[in-house]
Amino acid sequence: MTPDNSLDFAATRVQHTPMRLLIIEDDRDAADYLVKAFREVGHVADWSADGEEGLALALDGAYDVLIVDRMLPKRDGLSVITALRAQNVETPVLILSALGQVDDRVKGLRAGGDDYLPKPYSFAELLARIEVLARRRGGRGEETSYRVGDLELDRLSHSVKRGAAEIDLQPREFRLLEYLMKHAGQVVTRTMLLENVWDYHFDPQTNVIDVHISRLRSKIDKGFAQPLLHTVRGAGYMIRDGAR
Image (cartoon, rainbow, N blue to C red; front, side, top):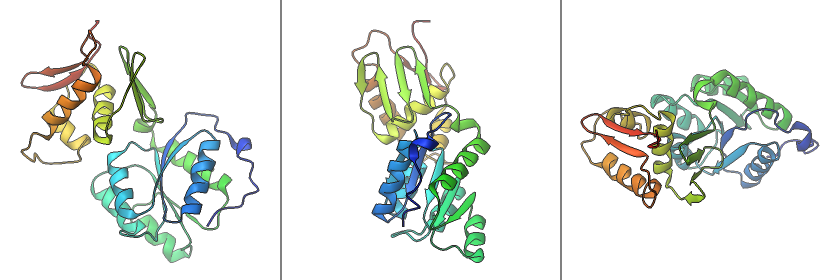
């Protein structure tokens, strides 16, 4: 179900830092409309068609706001939100649903949603509500790019470059690099990585971190004169500008 098409997207073009949004919606037409609309006003939007994939993306990606339908295949929207909150993921969630009765809205908010907008809706109102959620959040949503030496990471375009070279990273590698660059110049421990990159609050006793660090190092350092990713023996890892 798409909103009132009378809105001129150009008239609402974003006047502040762009956001990265995840739309979890099984209606392809409705999702396509939203992706296009958000891009028209300067934001970046990803789309998932079912609850299981949407939950995985929300856990694995760096999003400023999630837009979640309630009636989804594989896993319903409220279950997705409950699972996110159980994993201490605090990304703001706006529930966008045809279930618009008072009881429906109350259930959505109690499940962990931050706002609830019934369908049909106005895109202008949806955009305004999302902007409010992003402003309230603060912290993680403020930075959209990081730079260490000649290495650049852009959260919105999900791209990484070192000098003029484009670097192709898998989603987990991207999240790992993002966390390291967010804490550039600081020692990042294995526990910090397990909790913030893998969402593990225990040590699975595997070499998963070593494998991903090795792959990441080969992609961002191999072929370059100055290594940026360093192992701090007995402590963890650090990414820093080696020219200093």
